[in-house]
Length: 248
Image 1 (cartoon, one colour):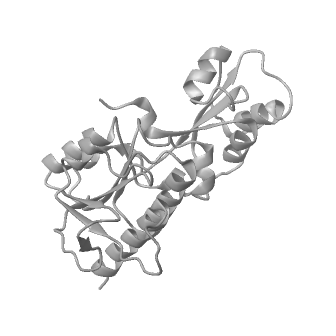
Image 2: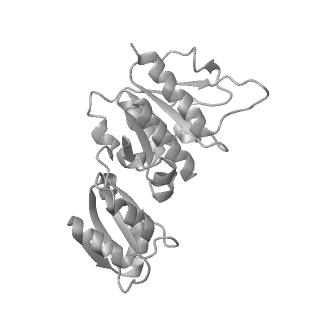
């Protein structure tokens, strides 16, 4: 089932909200302030929202904490920023142009998710599946790591990585897992036009329930006694290998 959050990147905290309101290239759906919140930055947020015609709403402190998704750092304010390329995976699977996809599983470090989104967008990957559970949410830390690209990245939302794996497999995608002990080299392996690369966490790898849907496994050849790459670095290698193979 699609979530209303599948259309927005929610940014919380006073300075991050000021930054998005001050960026004319971003469409801000609404700003929500906690009742009674005051102090540094609040007046500026209210002024910027009014100047841009952005709806300004009030909610209880508890409601803001819940909706922002980070009760410790929301500072009583959040903004929903329209992400024009974010959509539910189910909708994207109806798009005939969706061919090359990354599926993130268990990657909980915001810096890694942000860097993956930046690289995948730069490489022209058709979609990055970011499950709502089990993967770092698209928050200010992810946005910062992506250098702002997260707002425009081709993010595909789904409840869990297992749901994504099942849906992609049913839609005819070849799920190809990346693992340090993969029997085939990424640079020698072959795959069909519709392929989804599955990237797991550095500690646990791809989860067992997701791995059931993986058709084949590849590795990135390592030298110098290095066991593996950081997952964001590995994703960059995958993305630009895809670029290399599809470039004229």
